[in-house]
Image 1 (cartoon, rainbow, N blue to C red):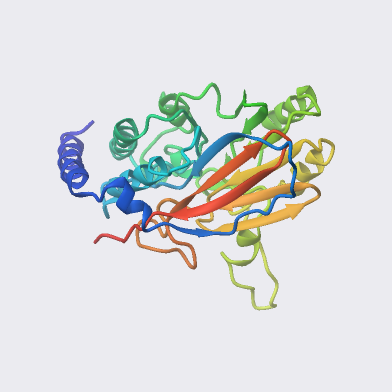
Image 2 (cartoon, rainbow, N blue to C red):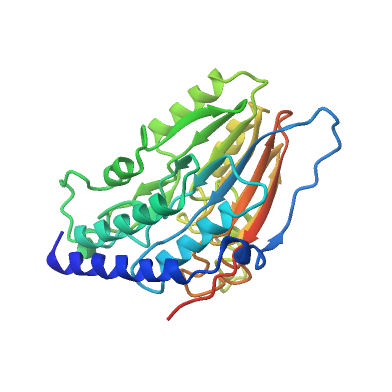
Length: 332
């Protein structure tokens, strides 16, 4: 790390130490909680909750605008819940950006993320790679050459401790599939889809799971989403709506058709749009769960305040979702 980055890191540590001392208590934070849409579940006397998840996504931590303070506030709010989570799912875009940043700036952001996480979180956590977690793809801005040891997704896989850029795990009678939504378009950026290797893995993975085992799919970019389709772009001059290939999976219908073969695929969680929505289609519910950073630490993004989702999973394959804001106000 360059000398200037070391100075920035020391400044960050000093600022967050002071911020931690001046934060409201967890109980005070909870008085600021607001919630939106909660799924209504049919009555089932035999239904039991088996897992409670905090899904937080799009933290976009950076040295500016008090982002580390905001991340701290969010984690404290999660852990101050009376009904505490058993598991945290990080939906990606953990850092503000690595696509366009040099190695020193990227290192500084990852240091901030993990120093904050280590200090504030003791709950088991699983991670997903977001597009902004990928280092150096925009080489004309990042200065990367493409042959660096940590180029692309390698850095994120390493620091997040992932078994692979996509993977699965089982817990509490549910099966979890974590996807890698982001594929390179060179200096043109990225697009949202599964590469052929990952799609074949997904097909094989679904085929091995017992039909009685409910499945949750986590991706950074939505597979299907109303906000991606209608709230992030305006109609063109012909009044036609278009969806950019980096806002929603361009192979979303292909994935959806694959899911139709497996009725035990129950729910998909995503972030990326920084908005909250729900789409129910052919037996699968797609939840887009806002952003911890809101409008990239500048307050609310459109109608969505900074927040996270609490998701309850039940033994009969049902679930519910609640979006929680944590009272964060933007810093200068």
